[in-house]
Amino acid sequence: MSPAATLLAALDAGALCARPTLQDPAFDLRAAFATAEQLRALRSARGEQPRGYKIGFTNRSIWPRYGVHQPIWGPVWDSTTQLLDGTEARLSLQGLSQPRLEPEVVFGFAQAPRAGMSLAELQGCLEWVAHGFEVVHTHFEDWRFAAADTVADFALHGRLRIGPRRPVHGWLSLAEDLAALQVELLCNGVVVDRGQGAVVLDGPLQALRLWVNAMAEHTPDWPIRPGDLVTTGTITDAWPMKPGQTWTTRLSDPRLAPLTLHTEA
Image (cartoon, rainbow, N blue to C red; front, side, top):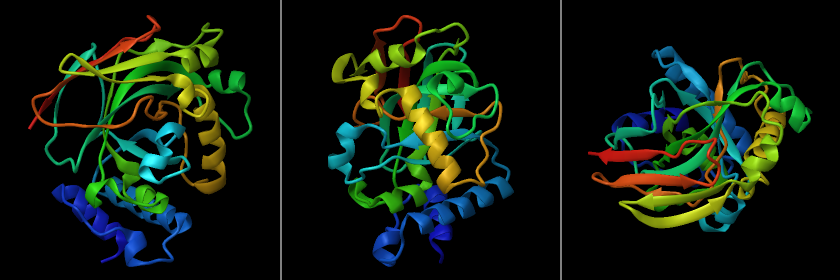
């Protein structure tokens, strides 16, 4: 089977599969994005609707741990993404392969951006900002992969839960404030990790600008549309998840709501 067919079957089964880079040493980022485009078309053809994108590996502090030293990205879907009415949610881990949790900053676009924008111009394209939980997973054993593998493997996207949306209009120091954001991640009431927004390529809005430019260079056929949302990468490490856990966050900026996530089998 092709890498796309193999990965789609693994996604649907919640199963492991072989890494494309081990099957074919010539499988590079260009081939990975081509595979990702095939998967995007296959998922759209079976009725899934794209809701926007995720950016991964923006947190430089975790690059050595996973052996991926550059950002990646891929679509998120109506089947994987939920805008929460409040700050608490329940999530089944069924169908996820080796899931891990990431606290992130998420943006919603009011209008399409273009490459080369300043931070202020990019902010002018945004409608809202929120705190979210992305559940990442991989179909490769023990979370071992190369960058090209992760691009092909749905950019490791599993689920996305987004808390209350805060309008960005009038938030004059958005880039600086999000870079200064302090996040504590707790599991069952115990702090397991801490992070600051600046670890995400100097800040979530800065990461978004770099991604818009990279999209134009590497995936120009992937549109960024009004109404799309983009989650910008984990502010802590990604933490393994099990059923029966309660994950919560504490945030230093009261304009963004902390979240609580209960996991189920």
